[in-house]
Image 1 (cartoon, rainbow, N blue to C red):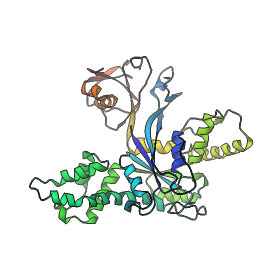
Image 2 (cartoon, helix red, strand yellow):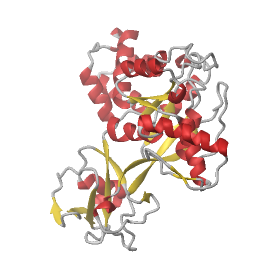
Image 3 (spheres, rainbow, N blue to C red):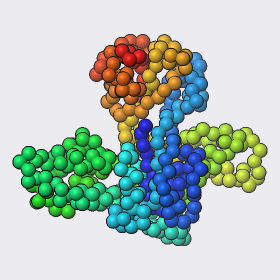
Image 4 (tube, one colour):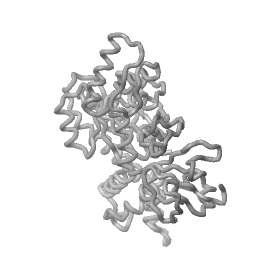
Length: 393
């Protein structure tokens, strides 16, 4: 399961975002370090279900009238403060917890109502643009620090006639969430001394920055945008490649109201309907959320998760079935499974995603939409429904 981590300074709204996206019961407070131990939960990205191309909806628990919700892991960790890479605050715990995340959402307090330490200040008195580069810089320096702490071992290994610098760096860097392919690609893209004793701190920081950009893409979430000055949002958009305005509090209110039967709302919808009894105060609050949704076509929480997985990680959704005509599994369930795969994946990759034994026994695959056999090198696309034929089936 893909892992999305929430990062940012204390009191930016990470835990509210987490709770809104998972409906998990976690501490939410207006003070630094509300989160001490990392929270791990299940959230979802949203896409169109292939059942929309059939006469009837599939009825899967993750499909709501053709809106398909695909599970991902969501991680909420302690807030980051300046100097976290040196262990300040809960920095080491924060950064260690991020090492296995596939993508990071940098939750920024767009209102400017909290300072660099996460302490409440007058709304608009702090420049949130400072928080855009903040997380990247702390992660880069943390990775560089790990490399530096282990550099003596690398230098000692270099005295051996069989020493291979790339192999030594691969062994070191795979320990912080990088794959061998990531390390190889990083080493090809940066210049560095051939002898370990010639490396400087600048060389190690350059390596760490390139590796972090490759392995830990960061999406900026402009949280509290419903109370943020308009100029803050504009400046944030200028400071980052992609900025998703969001109101985590608004999403949480809708999710809780939906659970109570007061509103008709699915995460990611651009609007909602009030269908239950609500007080006048609750109605006014919901209408304020609606006004925000009208401007951004939603609360931004689902949009941020989708941007992280489908855009930044460049993944798509594929659906394995056993019956290519009915699109069912062996028990007759229609489209029971959905898998997120990186762009360029083949039917064999989907087979391995289902189960290692299915992948090992892979024979061929059938495009269930067109009822035709597809080749091993065929690149799957969003919404493909595929029958995997395997000796392990």
